[in-house]
Image 1 (cartoon, helix red, strand yellow):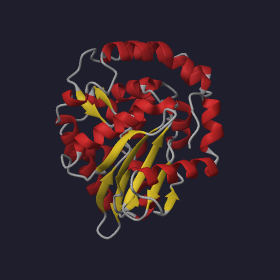
Image 2 (cartoon, rainbow, N blue to C red):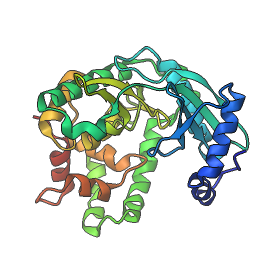
Image 3 (cartoon, rainbow, N blue to C red):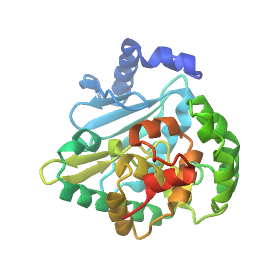
Image 4 (cartoon, rainbow, N blue to C red):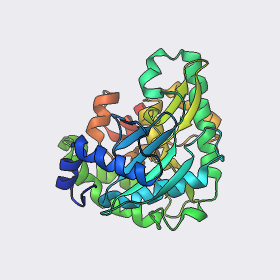
Length: 307
């Protein structure tokens, strides 16, 4: 029911056509024994995701992202019950047709933390970031070996070397000015990153948008979206933390780092920000602002210092 999708052009045409997407989701639900269940598409997310009734979620991956679908199914299956914050329980995952894959999972309760953050009292914000720090400590302590066959990048040193070669052009493509672009090679050369760190299971996109919370008491009720998971240096997970959870607030980042048990050097976190697969420095600058001193070391302190 869903057409092959292997290019960006095919993806743009299909993802926006709810007639096509819904027909495929309904057909797949029928094959999974859920015929007639009401489907409600979530407005957010990279991949098309549907609530199936009140208790289930169906996430679809085209052929161009089939490996992400396999990774998410495997990672969620591996993690269930191991973290202090719930993750979706996998009911089924596998291949559909024309290269598409799916993950059928339980629906977690709660509201999206990004949507309610402005309502969260300061004391509860501090407690929530501490809970996130504790969660990351557990995640990073788990043995990633059972997932090595589905998660990259393999050699962490080769990954960071490749990203060093790519990052200037990637940021140029996002519209970063020459004054900042010219600083990147020297900055990265000056920041030592381990070529073979202790291997940790990484979520890679620790953001408020990927947490659910119960407003009655402001407790975390879920963490989701493991499709971009990797195995590598644990500091890489703190890019999303600093940019999208604590958002340049040194008190909150300090609180989170204390609960985690380790604080990373700001220059290291900015280096990984530049090397991150989805890095978009101009976007981050619009969101968080820039210091008066327009240098990358000053930017690292502004976004990633702790208090």
